[in-house]
Image (cartoon, rainbow, N blue to C red; front, top):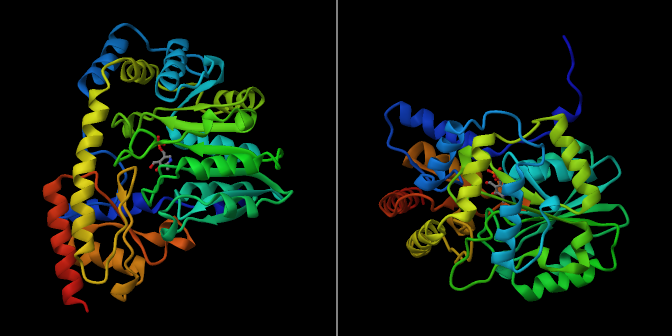
Length: 391
Ligand code: PLP
């Protein structure tokens, strides 16, 4: 029997996909399942973006594009970053990738190897740890704490840096907590990083346009002190409801950019050409679709937080960004994964157990409010009934 390399024994998963599969299987058996598990907007991609892809196909954009992405799109990304963040970026620093995850994959491959240490948020997006383990580097979790409003702590992050640290991964607004790190903490971290010039930074800002209550998104890209070692991860999946199109982008300092470009050439060659033209239409077209979607998430956020706080033993901090609520369920008497599993099997509500996002996720579950208000209310009612009957 041929043997695959050991690294594949260390690679992890994203349990949200397993929960989605189980929820779909139960629904196929005729069960009424409400899915608050998967993290994707429940809206269709806006029609003008879909039309741009159709037009691109009709216009004959059927071949390979440059591995880095078509120039008009890289220029469009640079202009969009300038419009939103006031930061100048050259199209030569922008790489178009098949989904935000690919930036993560490339950056972790670039800095992870046995003997290296990589810091990542815990609870956090599960692929960070999975990829770090794949490379043989040591994963160093940075606790993300409820009492800090689920912001990352500059002091704690800096205290975990050693001479072996090669990469620090940051994520704000955050999955799974909805936490947004305020400017003062970001600036403290940036100032502290000056003492560690050997450390690269990957800033995952895929939810950057989804903040609420006037909370500002502070991009790490705005800090010249770390610009020569900062990798920005962003994309279209969440902002424009395009998860299935597989469209992301990243901004890299020149030496890393070359390495990333070579990884692209060695793997997927380029991103789907028609999707790239659609991505350009998303950036250059009207932005009301983004504002409307965020306003709708905001309305649902209030419904979900209010409803969760009424459940016995549950308390939920108000998330300031993304589209997730991360309630503390430790006073229900349930372990988080057991509760998530029982809610799906017995109450027909799919949520994700906090430990799927790291060891510091115990005591919490994640609900995505990318679902209709009607379904959210129904799910809350089912959860209330379930908790009341399982005291
Ligand atoms: N980063 C975070 C924090 C995410 O939550 C996700 C998706 O859930 C991604 C990156 C990946 O996005 P994409 O679907 O564009 O690969």
